[in-house]
View 1: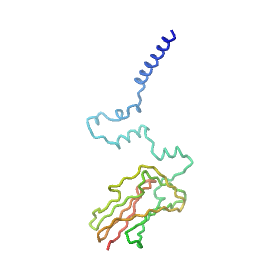
View 2 (view 1 turned 60 degrees about the vertical axis):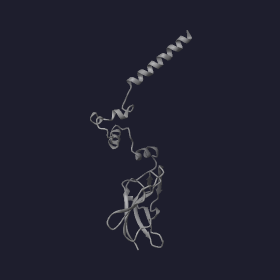
View 3 (view 1 turned 90 degrees about the horizontal axis):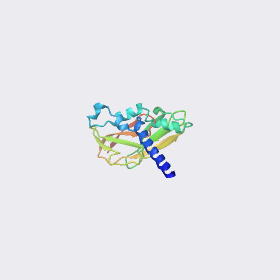
Amino acid sequence: MRNLALWFGLAILIVGGVLILMFSKDDSTNLVNNNIDNENKADSNFDIDEYRKRLKDKDKIKRKEKVNDDLNPDKSKDKNQSNIELSLEEDKESAEKKFKLIAENTSDQPQTLSFGTSQRYDYEIFNEAGEMVHHYADGKSFLQVVEEVDLEVGEKIDYEITLPSLEAGDYTLVVYFGGSTGSVQREVAEFSID
């Protein structure tokens, strides 16, 4: 009798679990199927940006900044990119062609720079004809690590950029800063190789 009651209870649990799975589907159980319109089913191209937008509209995705704010409510972050001023200085003393990228907190509050990878900057070099002759990140791999760097009021952080050897001529260097507090920032410098 006791075994029969145990088997009967187990059967009820299994049937109940199956019924719960069948009747309790919500938007989050099958995100891919629920987020593709009928008109897009015929199209084999998958648009990741549209997919993310739909998930965000359904409150399934939180912005990274919002997650950080929720986890660190006491840590104030000013996401205004204009609070970080960039400058690019050429090192004329070096035998190699070198530049220094400087990021300075020009605000009256501490600022946080967020990096999504180990890459801190990127740059491109253009010749006189406007053709790109070198792109720093080409062929490189960067670690996928999230890091935040806090800059106090007036504090600077700098990165040394050593350019590859180039033929004689006039060039334009465009440096992109990887520390994200808003939009992409870049600095431009012109230089010559004798």
